Image (cartoon, rainbow, N blue to C red; front, top):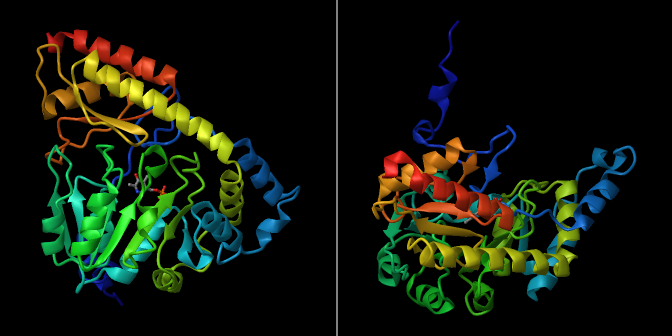
Length: 371
Ligand SMILES: *Cc1c(COP(=O)(O)O)cnc(C)c1O
């Protein structure tokens, strides 16, 4: 007997979905990895200690499920932001939180709007919900198109601030204008806020339709542990708790995140170093090379390379990307977005890594195809 091929039993929108394309994670040696905005420094030494303590001598504790509510971590995040625990939900990375938000607020009858460019996971999550995506284009001024968002008719507006991949932060005055004119849920994805001057957490109290999403992957150097969180009105948190996996954050991840949040001095140190490296690199792109470069408030920079003839454009960016790639320096090029096709996004590494990048770009400028 032959049954129906299983693929045809799927919901009709699923076979048409396109999975998210993550940045390359090469496994070989010798790469300078400046492509996925990971932290170039290790996490606080307390993190490894906490993980080892949790594992114990024989790993017996791993037999047991983790705390389903991540209670201790919720309390630590609440203390960090000076809010009540009822305003915090912990996720398996902030991608999990974004997914939970889409489960609650996005579907065939409620679409989502987001700026172009922004985090390219958003349309993937909206698609999984069979919702409609409404991209709202940004131009080089990176001013928030408040009117267009208000008119979008979407149920949710997702905003990456500081923006990815430009690194530019949106001022709270513009976010407040969105909150005043857009009737849906406003999600501000603050993956890079620890590197920025301003953040939207101060707007939470006055705006029950605001959700701020944070991650420990970037500033806390814990991308491998997968911890993120939402700050929102208790009613929104209650919805997220209804739709999340009950054991969504592992024992080791909870222990690691708690230890990291317990060492603010360490993190102030490495965040300060990353910001200093970033600012001097942005400066040198602008002054030494004469390349248009966004003023980044994140842990990456977005610059528009010019070849030795002074030309810029998508082909020039691709040529620089390819040259760096063959020399095992990994950065990111986003050819499909009109605003950023002529740019490279470069994660801020150590000072040594930035020097190597610069030497390699000098070699690219001298290469024959750029003559
Ligand atoms: C890196 C990143 C995330 C993902 O964070 P995880 O916590 O690792 O899932 C979310 N949003 C933006 C804008 C990011 O750049």
